[in-house]
Length: 225
Image (cartoon, rainbow, N blue to C red; front, side):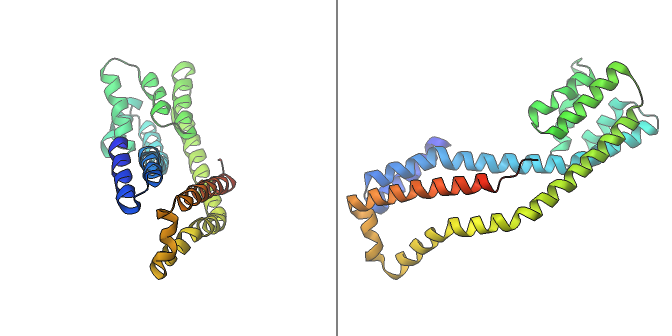
C-alpha cells in the first residue's frame, strides 16, 4: 500500500507540475506519510473504543462473580455480548483458554495487543487474585471505579485543550488556504512556484518549515494522561 500510494502521488505530482523535485516530494509523502497517518488514526480510534467499553465489560464481570459465576464464564459472556473491539479481544482470551493457557496468562497478554494502562490494570488485578486469592468482585469493582474516573478525567482534559487544538488547526491550515485561494484567483502568479526551479526550492523549503511548525504545535498541545 505504501509503494502504490507513493507511486500514485509521485505520478500525479509529475503530471501536474512537470517537476521531478515536486514528484519526489509527493512520492515521499505518499510512501511514508499517508500510510502512517491512516494506520495511526485507525489505531487511535480502536484504542478509544476499547477504553470506552472496558468499564462496562468489567462491570459485567463484577456482576457475574457476585452472582456466583466463575471468572471464565464471565469472560465468555463479555466475548459474546460486548461491543467491538472488546468483543474481539475477550474472544481471543477465551480462545487462548481453549488451547490450555490459564485465564490469568491469557489476560496478561491483553496489554501487548492493547498497549494502554487500563488493560494493564485489568491484567494485574486478575494475576494478583489468581496468585494470592481474595475477593475478585471487590477488586474488579474498585478497578471499574478507577477506569471510569480515568475516563472522566480524560474527557475533561480533552475539553479544556480543545481551544488550543482549534487555534493550532487554524494556524496550521491558514497558509494552505491562502495558497489555494491565490491558485484560483491568480493561477499564473502561483504556478511559478511549481514550474520554475527556484519556485520548487521555495515550495520544498516552505513545506519543511510548515511541517516543523505543525510538529512543534502538535507537541505543545499533546497532553499525556
